Image 1: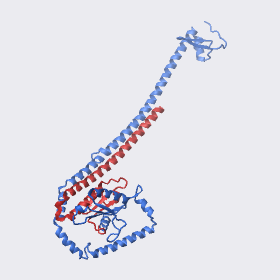
Image 2: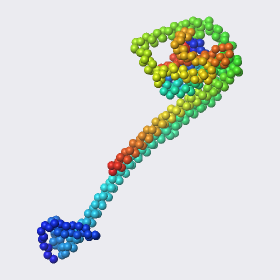
Image 3: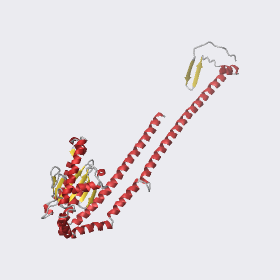
Image 4: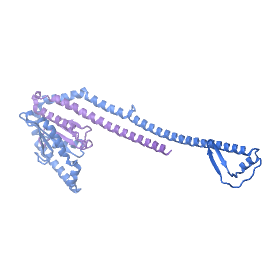
Length: 123
Length: 274
């Protein structure tokens, strides 16, 4: 922020495990830590992070003219969006786990059915 | 009736309707010879023995068939029972991993979602956020004073002196980093390979995304990774907020792109520097 004389900063990590946070978007005042997974490229966290950073810039610049822009309203939406992103990544993680387990179960049942069919043929 | 030995004529056995006709057959079975030889009516005796043999053979064959089939079914039933047990166990195990009220995946998912929603509606958190906004609004004057004081305070991170010190430290870090890369023979091609996303650099992908958001607000994104800022080349993308939204002032957001792991402290330091 200092080098570019910026009012807010967004750091974008290519994977969640490379970021020091556990959520796709984590604000720290005028700094925002965002994850844009380079295999998934879901831009929502980045878009929300940029929008939030923009709001904090407007907040800083507007000073007492804050009434000119409904920054509170926007930041509130950003806050809500951030929580939705966290919930989404949680649900997605569990759905992935559930999907993998179901696949394993189907494979197991397929194996059993194949074995039964083979034995019926040989009987 | 007297039994008269006959020579060895050609046997002739055939079925005539519901009857079996046997002609000129020689059988040298000792038992048969004894039974027929001692019978009052050898023809009747032979007929009885033949019919009895047929019955025995039929019954025996049937029993063998039944035994074989029964055994096969028993084996099949046993194997099917084993397979079914395995399937049920697998299903129970999987179901338990999902549905166990204490340790199941759904329980865990519900707990986490519940926790997120609790946090979302935590009144204290809301107050904290609002209070922060209010502080920013009303604290403008105090902030201005502090800013001026910081400019002449050598201990303040915003003062020119502190900035110069930090810049020296950063220069040293960069030098060490370059030295390390040269030492391990890290080529540009290898770096590109590590940071590439389907043939493109990750920075380019991020820039496209940032540009997409910027266009919604009329902001101007600029890739500045190769341009020196006030001190160095830190900061990859500079987003200038639409001047219509910032009358009389310039709002800037710096975007730093990272394809490597950083600690929280390093992350904040990167953003501060950028």
